Image: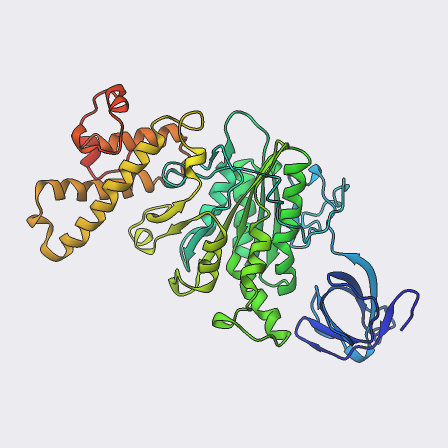
Length: 475
């Protein structure tokens, strides 16, 4: 070992993406290293790889290799410790750029000139400096804006099942999302483990919608090393924090797919021979996910905000699987996609009943959206829940044997799914969504609208009842 530059020649061994070394004084957790193998037979210098110290003991360390380890001979490798932690050069000029999972240019352009180089392993926001999330982010999706409102500073995950159009919904939200009032807004989009067809579709959608200039895209491809997948969301959040808290932008961070991230976390943990937890995932997965999700929020005294919309696929459609289960504990609600709605051709197939935005009350109502927002949403939810119950009963006794009230609720449930939830790829303002809700409710007598104050009912013009019970789409 070279004591001046801390260069180690020869390693103990290699296991998957991990390189093991011994006799390394003054190594630090998270320190970046450079790895070089033996020269090629042609005489050309060996390719240099980068890595990061992820485990320390008294006499040995484990290094995470960030590139492919194939062809690397441990006994003939050379490792140089740089004394630096992983950092990312960030700047407002990153808007409009496409980067790889480590923040390197993937669009053929030179790297942005950095304004700062913060460490990518940022900390959760200090609770004493946190501002309560407030104000509304409009996604243009009625089932989210109207029924499960997204609030600035919130973390609201999307729970999907394999084969459902979660990626299409994520791309649609990136293209449509905005803050009202003309305040500066940006989107940071991070794709983890995406196949070529998927990330190509993301880029085409962003370009076609003309939103790439306000978006920073981080793409970790399916063929990239899993170690890079663990750094992708942290690089994306480091960029988002700079845009939000240095430049005062309201930033929406869309992370897809968190399940790919967790699979990479499990793969690395198994390579380190750690004792597995539930279903083979490491026992610290809750803490690891929290280091990502808890970077959302607002800082007191600063104008910007950082909002997260993580997308994850539930293995085996299991809501109690460790990934959605732990995510639900950390975040403030969930948007759940339904396989039954997708089979019926409803898009986006958002199941409103298990979906929840715990901070909806902070971003909906007077001064935020409209005075009637929360009452209309509550009434729609109540009627839809009853309509779903009637649908299950009709499957047993037959629709012909239902009473008039049950038939009305059943028709309402169908119209709600086909018209309000199933909006297709169109953009709806919150006003459009609430007016569509009122048209659905017009099929009921005023006495049945128990969740809506009488003053709001008196202020509404009379509407034909047929609009609420036709079962067709809402214009």
